[in-house]
Length: 196
Image 1 (cartoon, helix red, strand yellow):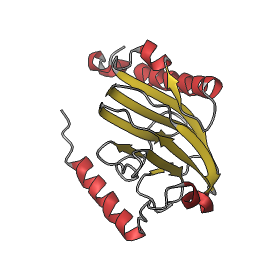
Image 2: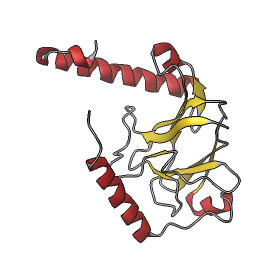
Image 3: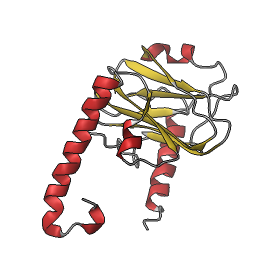
Image 4: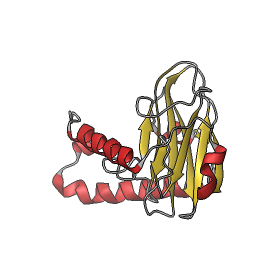
């Protein structure tokens, strides 16, 4: 059932179907992809994902004193890419008020040409922080759209206090004041976003 063709009286069943769909997808990722990994997903391809988009999906499950470092080469040519964290129902964590997603224009690429993003509850003070909020577990998704190749990301779990020792030495420090400005800019951009 497509949302555009739903009458008000059919809205409740549509919501129930979407919740059921997302919960089944979460179970599938946990059982077939595993935890704290990102694996190329063919399931979304079969369900009707964008035909020229490569999806990588997995689950994150870390404590407040741990973080995940997602490291990947970037495609030689790509029109767009994005990485995000979601909750335990496949909803993106509040992307307006939290830095829970990054795209190719928002993220910082390291001097070796790689993307390194850090998933954690607490701000590690790095540019590519993905805020998982208070969710002990949830979804990780990375997408390459119209890409010449599809590099496979590597996910490494490390203690929160050791995150910098697993990143390049020239990784900038993002101060709390800089993060506040960054999040204010994010909110403003969301408010100015064109909604069809």
